[in-house]
Image (tube, rainbow, N blue to C red; front, side, top):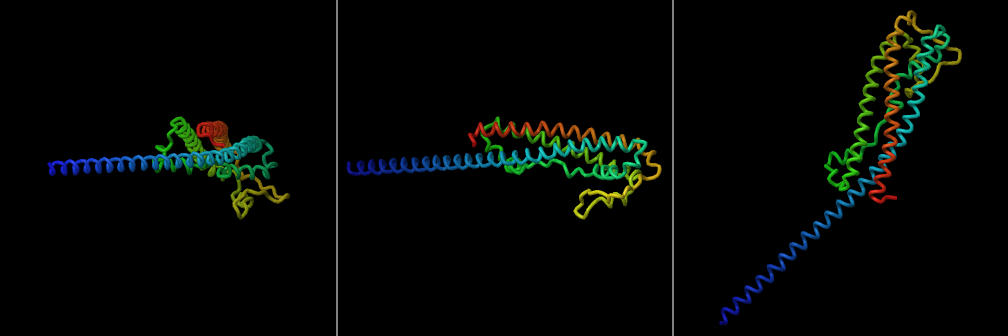
Length: 246
């Protein structure tokens, strides 16, 4: 009898300790899971905040690029009009400046601030964005950014074609004189009016054709950037609403 009682006590103690151990492990797992969930929630919110900051920077960059592209449209139209005029050599002071500025695409090219988006992609961070509506709209925004990047690549290709044609019309040394040490296009002195190259008229067809391509893509990019800035503004509003950000 004494042996059985002792055995029951040992068994009861074993079961009790096992239950305690099981509860401790379960509680530890539960606490760790809560900790990881809280940490991921905090990471998600931080990523969302930096995403909003990136979009706000994009809006500023887009606003500047759109304004500059609008000015570029007017400049390219003036270049076409003046260089095809019978009195083109009376306007060479402007023509050389306009002709040189055609190649300055970096001055107004849009470069998106995609630090947060790249972080989300490279570290599989999109799994942290539980709100799938937000994740989808972020992805769609950067799809449009990528399309503009491709268009700017096309614009760069047209510019490469423009350069050798322009050298048959404009004096390269005169081009050099209107670029300062910082690489900015400036102007000639008040009394300097360099002439177009002899026989430039023979190359106007190629010049006009290529310039038309540059004008077309410039207008298309400007329209795309105008749509993108609206998309960015709406995305910020949507994110702030979904995450209750100030």
